[in-house]
Length: 496
View 1 (cartoon, rainbow, N blue to C red):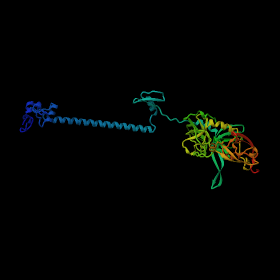
View 2: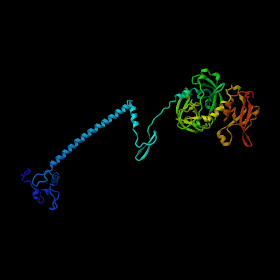
View 3: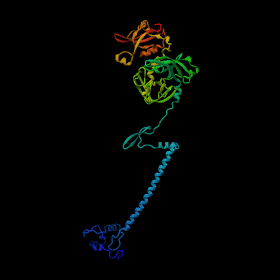
View 4: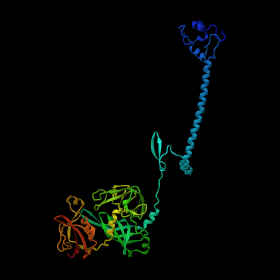
């Protein structure tokens, strides 16, 4: 037995190895001995470990010995490293738990309104973007070498229009039209009474009448018109003038039909300037929506100068004469019953006359109004007309012609003026006595524009036998159509 407890009969390959004898303990067990030309056998790893550690040598030629103590040290280091990893993982989990717990509490407080918003606002004001450039409304932030324009704040402002509505509402009225509806079934005509609702705007007052503007289609075919004022009273109204092309009409209420309380409660609307409108500015619509009474909707001016064809075949749900001009588009809700009501600016000035017929059921989320700057000259002319009321059928006047409607399509195709083409003049009638001839085209009757035979017949309902009417015609000459004015005294159909 040696001092290192190896058995005596253990083969000592170091002493038997010439390389070991030549190199002593320093060369024994090396990976390769160049001088001996023979690699160490069996103990390379142990000797290498012994040389690197240096302190584990077991006497004499066993410079390398076994590296078991070194392996135990590495295991200890690994055990210490695993312990620190566990501690680090526990700390990390604690931090994550605390972070998510705090975030949960913050969300709960925000949802319940318990968060101190004033403090948050102060902190947000103190925070400033990097490389801020520009005005107080916007900032430019340097990101990745590019200047990005950002909004510093985002706010939603709800406009309070209570004062505007309070001042304007006394000038808005509800218009109720009682009329006779005629329907045809398999060649049989059937008539029934019906009611329709609309709106109106008080635009003037003379010595005897209160004047209200509305849409032509609101009062067309009327048997009786009733106006309801904001304070609840009602009065009968009469047609003063109509313009079907612009879908405008002026109706009048005799002042004698109004109480002093009503007269004290109403106001004349202030007309604005629709030519000064800009897209995006606030808009307010007031009218008798759905016939339930006055209501208010708000929005903005969505577009200006919208040109929409409103002939009966346009597909917009409109049945009637073609309406001329351009319109204001708004997203303020305009529903049935709003027609004839006011579209206002934020000052409370009338900038348009709403019309539910424009657009009809083909659109959603958009409404249209007749610009007040275009309507004002026509309204002023209609206000000067003589107020008319329907005459009993047996007392109505008789013109004495048969006519054909000259629509806009016919006018464009044949170069004829729009109106009623006189196909025949009957003898001993008002027409023949006034000099009306076959081929003439009636364009105005009693000051109102005429675009169809149906309109002419409706106008005659307001005239009695013996009334003198001014008629404007276009008559054919060698130089083409020329305008002429005739004055004729209506006869009676029964006596002729």
